[in-house]
Figure (cartoon, protein in one colour):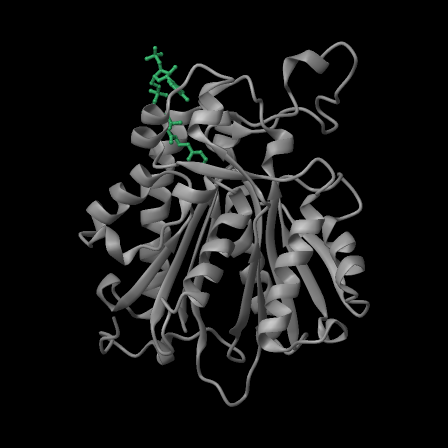
Length: 342
Ligand code: COA
């Protein structure tokens, strides 16, 4: 849907140069894990998972397929779409909660795999909100003339940090990667209109992986405690997700000088269909306005909104000139939103 906005979004546009998403890419691993498969290993059912989450299947990476491999595949797809050479990429920002290792940054492995030898590389740690945090950082570098071409990736191998004996969490997550290339295009007025990012460390312990850092290193004594897996207080996360995503959406829309009625497509974090339905209900807009693929991939954390953006783009759901809203939420707590003229 494209309607005349209430006020001109151009007047609200961010300071500096226009920053456009010039291409997108994504990759999901081959192996499909169904709800029925899960019900053979933990006490759950297809019905429970479908009704409470909307998830039917998720993808699981091979043992020797790492976050950097999936990230590189998504990046190469984005580079191919816009015909961007690896040497032209000046910055790689990789959002992930499941890096190949604590250091070096997984972005450095991606650099090596795609041959982007001129890029500076760093990982962004903002859990499920990471892709939009990275997009905002990229946006700032381009708007201020520091870089021309930035590769932003969200990639996760959550299967490696999932406690497969915990039915409260193991049914929710999956693996995959999504990427976008950002540039200033002098001939184009389309691009990022507004963004909003935020965090609240008070709630750090409702969604976290407590072990594996300096606070609780994994030792022979605690190895059986599953400290190096996702721990979550589902109900608390649910409540915070709805509140934060609504608030973040309104903030980005206000900054853009637009209302929700101006938005053709909302691409939300793909955690749970009930969270998306609650947001649609409170915004008083039909659920069809949201792009949803969580039924096929589950929650792929930082990769989720990036994969959804690529699928929406490649399927023709996003039309030139459309206003789109991306909104995400994750551990930290973190949240972020972005309004883009496509
Ligand atoms: N299969 C069957 N039963 C399950 C189950 C599963 N996979 N997981 C939990 N249950 C059980 C619980 O043990 C509980 O049983 P009890 O009543 O006997 O104690 C019952 O189902 C209800 O659990 P509850 O946690 O109240 O369910 P819920 O309606 O809150 O749904 C979530 C659970 C996790 C789906 C929901 O809270 C949620 O989506 N939270 C947000 C999670 C999220 O998005 N995280 C990532 C954010 S980036």
